[in-house]
Amino acid sequence: MERTIGVILSGGQSRRMGRDKAGLSLAGQSFLDRMTKELSPLFDGIYVSVDRPGRYPGCRELPDLRPGQGPLAGLEAAFLRTEAEAVFLAAVDLPFACSGLAERVLAGVGNGDACVIRRRGGEAEPLFALYRRSCLEPLTACLDEGRRAVKALLDRVDCRWLEEEELPEFDLERALWNVNTGAEFRRAVESEKEK
Image 1 (tube, one colour):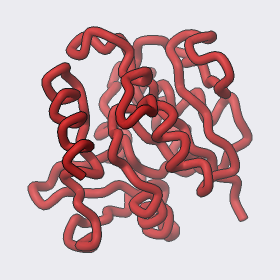
Image 2 (tube, helix red, strand yellow):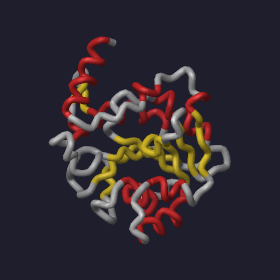
Image 3 (cartoon, rainbow, N blue to C red):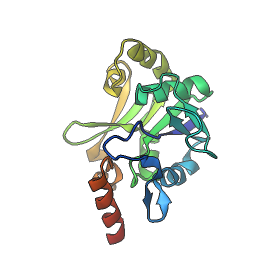
Image 4 (cartoon, rainbow, N blue to C red):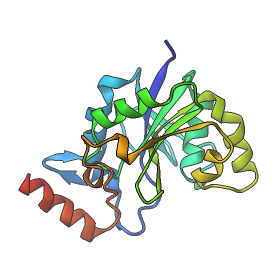
């Protein structure tokens, strides 16, 4: 069986939030700890993608080889710094993401290079998705060309799309709720209280 790791993208400068999103606390647990707890049972190891080493003592960090270049740089570092055959990327600011949804993504890749959820409106969710090592060459090419958007990579690989209609058992609005601002964080805290 191929070695698959989970890589939590800790985020860049968090300009809109004004503070490190990984350390935000929800129900007494940091975003980073919540994501680690959800993904740990599924993977051969959990790593945290960071722009510089030493941000999260006690965690297995994967420092970017190209700091400031976004999620593709984190994915590149994951393949170049580990022996993993596949990487499950998860953004730290998805506090309600669940292991069950990650399992569906893992099952959906088939023989493809990647598996990404696609919402009803056509929007892709590339930061809660699986990427195989076969993505390394095209993603390095994207970064070399200055194309930092994950969509640039998805256009170059055999991406298996997991359509929202195939996931009726999941509340994707909640599971993939991206918390970027202070107002969104306050709503997330309230939402957790109402659960």
